[in-house]
Amino acid sequence: MAAEQPTATVPGDQTRIHNIGYRSYDGPRLGRAYARRSLYSQSLRGAYGLGRSAKSKVLPMLLFVVMCLPAGIMVAVAVATKADDLPLDYTRYAVVLQAVISLYVAAQAPQSVSRDLRFKTVPLYFSRPIETSDYVRAKYASLASALFILTAAPLLVLYVGALLAKLDFADQTKGFAQGLVSVALLSLLFAGLGLVVASVTPRRGFGIAAVIAVLTITYGAVSTLQAIADVQGSSGAVAWIGLFSPITLIDGVQSAFLGATSAAPGGVGPSNGEGAVYVLVTLGLIAAYGLLMRRYKKVGL
Image: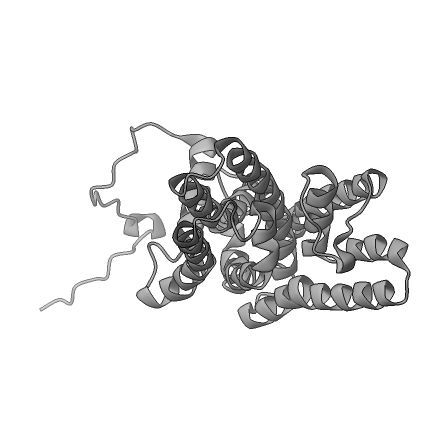
């Protein structure tokens, strides 16, 4: 019996095309704006642990309660004692609870950006359709919005409680509006600084420590130097020392232009001229997210 002769095969003959059911996408293409909004909303939800594990919700929700609890106690005291005014001004509330705000930023800023750096997912964001500026602005806007919710909620509790206690409507409305302006500026400043510092390292633990150092340690150092200057009679130096801490910057701006009582030693805030310098420095630091944009342009290459 004759053996079968092997047949010569051409490499092209091995090619096969299989129909596995893939179809082209015929729906609407929503583009950059939709991607930007989606990134913003997901980052904002993530700042409070929404859509994540139960463990991720504990700290932000706890800090939110800690921010609002003193406001509720103040309202209860004002109602019970039939006080003529609230125990604490609207503009002073965030300054008094600045440690809670700093802890929130230290926890959430690294969560927002450090994981993308650590797991090298940033280039995937920039593949299409968003660009570097879209990513940075969405992250910045989401953290600033989360901070505004954290700081404005207790002011709303104070305002509603003051109206229920039948305090003067005009005075309370004016104070509430000034407080909202103050915490909006604080949210923009703290969000920008927190994201820039957190983006330096992909390690979340290092990012948390760095943000705490920038926001909290600087406040302690500046407060100490201001107290020393006030004791030595150098009251003119107190205002200029306040330029070197984020929370004292906000305190100086609101005491110069919003009629707030300064938290500086002696209760004397900067003059209008010094307050203008405070505003310029604050706006310059808020624009620090431009540094973040340049960093992510390098990462996305």
